[in-house]
Amino acid sequence: MRRLRIVTHSAAAFATVVLLLSAGTRAQGPPRRIVSVNLCTDQLLMLLVEPSRIAAVSHLARDPSLSALAEEARKIAIVHANAEEVLRADPDLVLAGPWTTRATGDLLRRLGRRVAIVPLAQDLDGVRAAVREVARLTGAEARGEEIVAAFDRRRAEIEKKRPSSPRTAVVYHVAGLASGTGTLADAVLRAAGLRNAAEAERLDAKGALALERLLADPPDLVVLGHAEDEYRTVQADNLRHPALRRLLERVESVHIPQRLMICASPKVLDAVELLVDKRRALP
Image 1 (cartoon, one colour):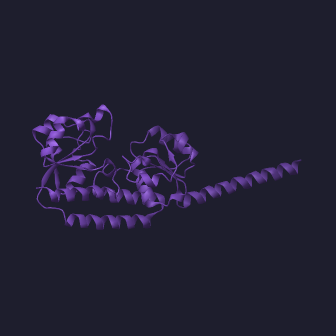
Image 2 (image 1 turned 180 degrees about the horizontal axis):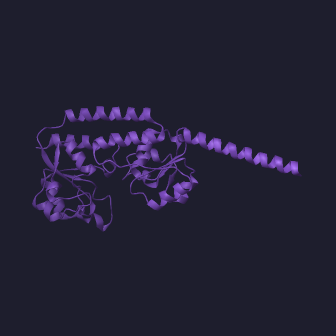
Image 3 (image 1 turned 180 degrees about the vertical axis):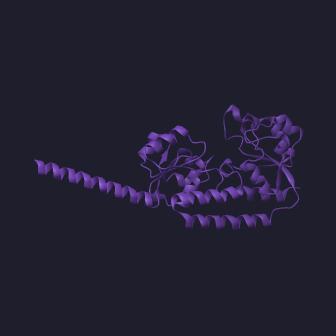
């Protein structure tokens, strides 16, 4: 009996050592089961890492109105930003944004999961930094540098065809929201050679622009962040207002899908290029 106990204890000790060694090996190599719980880290992750290493992305990644990579996300499992669902995916790395529920991140850390908060950029230079940060976290540095180099080349090509004379524009959303200074949409306007008319209204990221103000002093270009039929709620009534429709009959406008400006990924250059082409066509 004593010999049996010794053998049993030895086997248990050996199993513990094996588990510790495998855990150390897993931690030292690049993560193999990555979960993202933020729309913007979803897209950076899918651009950088092969699907076989992505355990799940957030449910928003499949929403074509919000995600620039919705089609790609349909091939990957999804989770909501709660610890129970994330743990079921058994991640060795969880990517989250600054606004991810703090309690979820804290609980996952207490349970031994690695959680990385990725700062979300608000300008084009920040896109490069965000790509490199997610590349570092996921062990995809080489791929990250390829993406940054392609981003820089495309950005330079777009700048070459950008008109030099400034024109004004405003990005107008549901509920009368307009993108003020310091926002990604503001950076997109500036990259396209447009001056953000919302700056005069001293709006920030959550600022609202009264329709009356827009009608009284319209910019050269109205950039619609949403199509009027995209939301069937009262929140989008401002986009269906007869006065706005009449304004758009005499002022140039363009619809830039929200999915191109909501996250600071390389896809943001699609929005810049659309605006540059529209800017060049302004009378």
